[in-house]
Image (cartoon, rainbow, N blue to C red; front, side, top):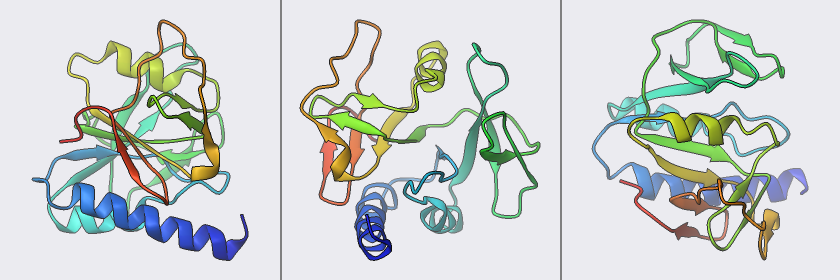
Length: 171
């Protein structure tokens, strides 16, 4: 995508996420720091924080372990994880109600492809209360099928610059 196409697509994604999340009562939302030209959730998070929401980021603590979610504010001290992704350097471990997950690819059944580490799958599978999961990405990542395996779980929604696809609960 050109810079202009990326900016236009990102603005559309932001509008969809805003209409989906802002009307809801404040809760805790997890997001990933944008890498590799992913959608940047931080402006949306600024508006949600101003409306009383809390934010957190997933942090990889060990290769084969579930991630933890650390509280995040725009002024949080940051460090980088083992993949070079900015994460909160410290902060309370919290449990999110909603998780915004970046998409490398997705299909019409609500399955996502990430970067292949399985961190989100492991983490979500071990959570006592499953948060609502919203995949966030660009329409060019849509495939007919990702050929999901038995352990794969579809997302509750997928948001791209073209639409919001809902498969489960997002509230």
